[in-house]
Image (cartoon, rainbow, N blue to C red):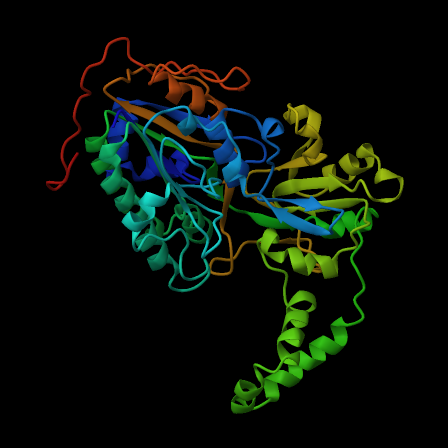
Length: 471
């Protein structure tokens, strides 16, 4: 394999540099190769960042700004599944293997093999072409338990190992390959710099060592960085106070809450007998929609939002500081200046950006009207129906680490020299990787080729072997 990319979701040099004595292969790449911080897109979120990486284009040319976007006409959030979007670097390279990169579902047909990554619904076809499916027996995209489950760290470790081993098994047949380690992101969010996370990085580092033996050149890249949190800020109460957002008054909520209380006193054996009666699933669904806490991941809470939010409100906020003006509201929503003034007063906001300041391209009109860049360590959340405004993170009860604007990049191998790169953006990765294959980038990209290629090819110096394992 001429070049292999290992995607490391949410990787940050601030943490990894502290652990390099535990990670000999990443340390060798850091020492012998070309590496540095990588500026992500805005906001620095998994979707769209991996698509910006793969295409070299800013979100305004892709129409991707978050995991989902508000559909004011249907009064719901529509999940972004951009796998069908053309123009990724692996479509420009023959004999490519792509495993588990976020934003690749549904799997697109390429000259090679595509195994989709998050978000990928269970039970759906996740690989292309069809002949590869029987060779992926036992492969999974998602963990069997949700992130806060006690078994999640073990599940995440097993799944990451399976995905890396699948890539290693298939890689010798291909010229270009990419495998992305996604669930390390959720481990970072929940456990910070805990030993659980270090154990995961040790496993990843061992896999990187094996990939270094498979490929002439190895690239490490993350979609964004990460760092410790100081507090959550709920933007909803601030928008309500400014008259920019209204929540629905649901008259069914009180009786449904009463029914929920009654259900707890029904003997368990009776509940088992009644569970399949047609009315009970309807009641349970209504309770979940109206009474139970809003799902933390907003795309999964789309049906809940239908009952809780007045969709004729002037503004709809999403997590990570996104604010969309409602084109269906009376008077086409509130003036942009009203929204900017309100958002700038929210605690923890470092800067307020309008769409035209950070995006360009044919799809800029779909972008949020405002993105609020938070102070490092502050997470801007949209928690509808919850009255709290600020609260500290609590280990074991949710995120204790959130995203940062700068992730990582590193190039290492036969065709890499030791130049220093002063500044790099996520858009630069696509044209730089293509340059290793002498493939010109598309003319409409936003990135530039980084000066990482050697003028002549020669074997890199070999780092010491660790315990008999490859490099």
